[in-house]
Length: 519
Image 1 (tube, helix red, strand yellow):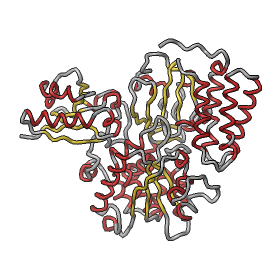
Image 2 (cartoon, helix red, strand yellow; image 1 turned 120 degrees about the vertical axis):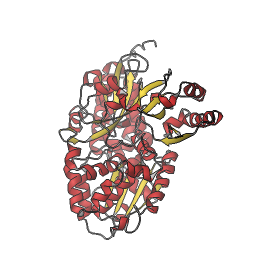
Image 3 (cartoon, rainbow, N blue to C red; image 1 turned 135 degrees about the vertical axis):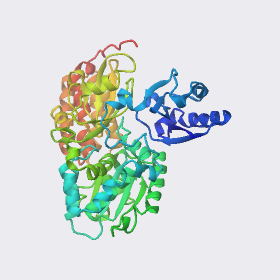
Image 4 (cartoon, rainbow, N blue to C red; image 1 turned 45 degrees about the vertical axis):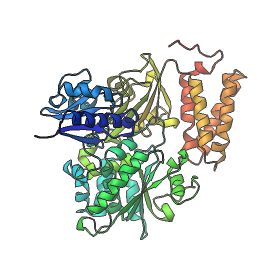
């Protein structure tokens, strides 16, 4: 008799709400009933409001139940979950659930489907086809494919990946490096973590392709120490890749070499900035470097270095496998491909949505997110992390497109969206942005180090009504200094949330404070 195949997420978000306990309860209940069960721990599908999500392989396909607690498990077996039996937690066929069915999953194609620790499972689901294609190509042809695809950095700056790779390829030097920025520290973001925990081989494959394309023979994944589950998954996948000769010397008999390891960061937000990251990776204090020289010419240990974030590198294998034209047919304008969007904050259905560029905020907030968790009107959303602008309801029809957001004086960043209902105090949010910059500044440049501290003080005086017109003028001047005088994006982008709150929600900066609506 064939074993009943059951899938439960091993993702950190799922584990935080009891996925391990649910998995253990399934095994215990199967043992009590003398049933043969194969339990597979997978990545999360991204429907976080349904975690712990339990999927069962049935004749019709994988069927979902959620959220499942240990006390629900016996009832699921009573309902004959192996046949997709009816139950109050039943969600139907997973692939037919609208939240998933209406996505365009390219980077996340395997997440939640395959066992992230199984190389065989990865290969069975089209894994390493991109690398196999790259091994038959000249480095310049690989770079050309990435350039033609329109792939831009998914970490915030949106710089074309192909141009960066071409610079490193053409740079002189016998030693070059590939560095993955996995220091995912923006508020409301978790897509990097989900890839590393749910499909680590795709990141390893992408970095290997980058190495072959640019002549780099060594790579480092700079991982934030707050992601222990990602570290375990990556280490296991790297070991498996070495054993199968997808890493190391003479990769798959090609004569190409590439070594890869994980290095842990110390929890500093500033180390998400690429040059601070390099300083930290070299064992120094994480401080911003002056540019030029660019890291592509003088990066890690002074050698030519490609620095891309997790989603950028994880997008590369499908480009090499399916072709540049396939990838660039998704999206709009100069924003090609897909973006994993993370819905967080006061939202009913929080989670991850991968869609082609062009989807609007309104679609994401209501068609996928289901509106606010509180049931109150959504007043503002912050897109792009703690340095992203606050967008009012009047801008919810803005398409997710790098240029469209720039025209709205906002940025997409890493694709994190934090939702606020109509009880939010936007003056307090502006103050938080300035305070965040003051706390996280590396201290190297005066506008960021001193300006952010003074900014907190000015906002306090403005909200207190101490010569408000003068304080607003000072605040705007200070923001201009931060924008144009800071060495890096930490100080340079802090004005985005501050000025957007001031421009779109001026009433919150006026005394008496806007009356809070009772919950």
